[in-house]
Amino acid sequence: MKEYISNVIKGIVIGCANIIPGVSGGTVAVSMGVFDTIILSVNGVIGKRGERKQHFFTLLPLLIGVTIGLLVFSKLISFLFEYAPLPTFAAFLGMVFGSLPLLAKNSLKEGFHPLSIVWFLASTGLVLLMNFFEVGGDASATYTVWSAIMLTLAMMIAAASMVMPGLSGSFVMLLFGRYEMALNAVAKFELLKLVPMAIGAGLGIILVAKLMASLLKHHYASTYAVIMGFVTGSIVVMISRTLEYLPANFWQIVIACLTLIGGIVVTLLSQRGEKAPE
Image 1 (cartoon, one colour):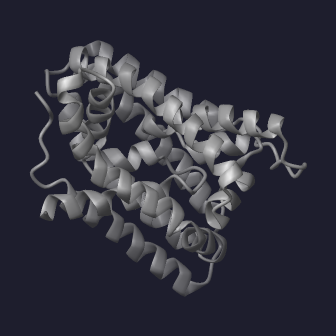
Image 2 (tube, rainbow, N blue to C red; image 1 turned 90 degrees about the vertical axis):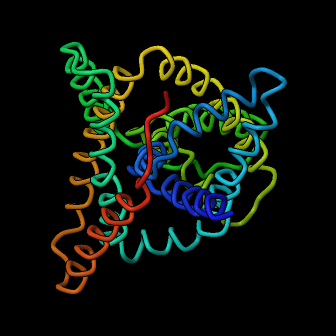
């Protein structure tokens, strides 16, 4: 029961992270020590029939948490993001910093490989390159069938990026001009928009989960070298976005420092006892 509640809480944090542009839900999943669990469980649910039930119940508390994070905390996160962006970003930045020791340990699980440096640099560069893309405005046109199709496609790509550490699903939605529409749909529980979003999210996660499960099984160390590159690039992007909110008043900076430290501590505590899967 203790582990079940812990996974629900971790899912809530991941769900909240997915709401904020520039913050990667996949990175937070890594920082919470549940990235491998999510990938392997999703792959297991759509895999062999005899193992589906076991994987489903492993995934269930995380799914419940993510749903709570998206539905219940969307308004709170939106409020914090609007009125206290510096401390909010600092908290998530702290979580990402706290994930680095576990990432380094996992990437060196099979020993040091020179090629891992290439993968690390390439994935870091990819995230930094994405940050230079111009963000499109949110669509304000009347919601139509075509809008629903585009929302599904955008969500499918966004969900795929949510699974990949270092890539922000919310940022992808911004690029497609669907972020405000999606956020309002979640906050106001608009079923006509939530249904295509759920379909797109399911398809995106399943497709990427199958790929990631195969990579984790056959190329674990190299995969984590890529993930560490994604996360490192994400840190650079998050720092630059955090600095955009400076200068700030003294207390905002003090609170931001405290939330940064808190994010690091919470992440390190959540990873105690975490082991790389064999």
